[in-house]
Image (cartoon, rainbow, N blue to C red; front, side):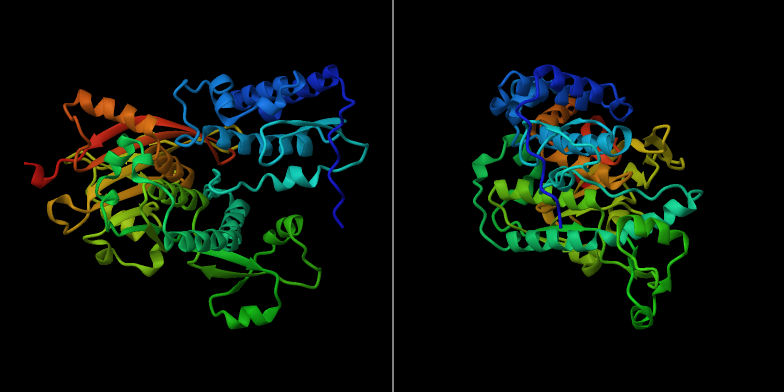
Length: 454
């Protein structure tokens, strides 16, 4: 039986609350998370001043995170993204760094007003604190990228995690498939003009947009008996190194064994959230879209269609096909590569890790091309890739942001382009915290010269 959540203690003084806040801000968990500290300090100060009910997404974005006065929460999910990251950081702080803390700060799911909760000795984190780590659609979550080969145990767990997310992702895709077949409530004039220009043919009547999400091969771990192993010819007994980790997360009776099965039904979180972002953007313009896993399509079926593709060349044959002749491409879990005539591809931007081997900076790649065999560029193919799927997510978020596209447009105008070219690529630099997308911004771009442009 789950114990009830502790009530917010109204008897706590401002001094006690401020002490709890300063304890968190001085902690190692928040050492390099300046924006999250600013977010937390602002909302706590508002609560301590009795103004917690005034907290809004816009106010936090402008006052705590430095967004401009023109900031639109509908176009920019910065605050929602930081709120998710902050909930996770608070959970980690009290679970690992300060489990003995007598007063804890919680940011309830669905609210920006913090709760100061007095914890009795030996009491565990509240259910809400844990549940709130599961983000509402379309929150920013990405998969744990595959670590370097030298980390044997981590590599096993990476494959396992790829399988674990299948059920949740299937539920998300069912939701998307259900939505895509229904009339949308959005109006075309609700789309910012710069976003509409970037989408181009995708917004024309009868545009028949297909959103395609790549499917990396993954291992799925099961604690079932031998019947599962024998019914799946591709199944294998799990390595013994996996057992201890599995028991930390899931119940596994001593008599049970673990089996690994191979699946091609998985998709990475960042790719999936990027697909949701694009579906929402199209829906706001009154456009319905079909969404399918890449495993059920072939490259020829994408010709003469409006296509949004999410995936990297390593696990997406379609992305590999389209990026083959582009000036920029992806080396997965490594870098953005640039191709120059007569030279081998060279790294342009590489991902960065901190001292704990966590990825803290990644890159996304937006590629816009006329669809193959399309006459007069009447259909368009848009590809969102990344050095990990958080990069792909950042690319999709960038493409859906009027503010970011206007910045890109200003760079293009310096090169003499008053409108978006027929084919182009943009590199998006993204900051992550334990694989959670925190922020993204323009890095560079390339205009692709087509033979039809001559």
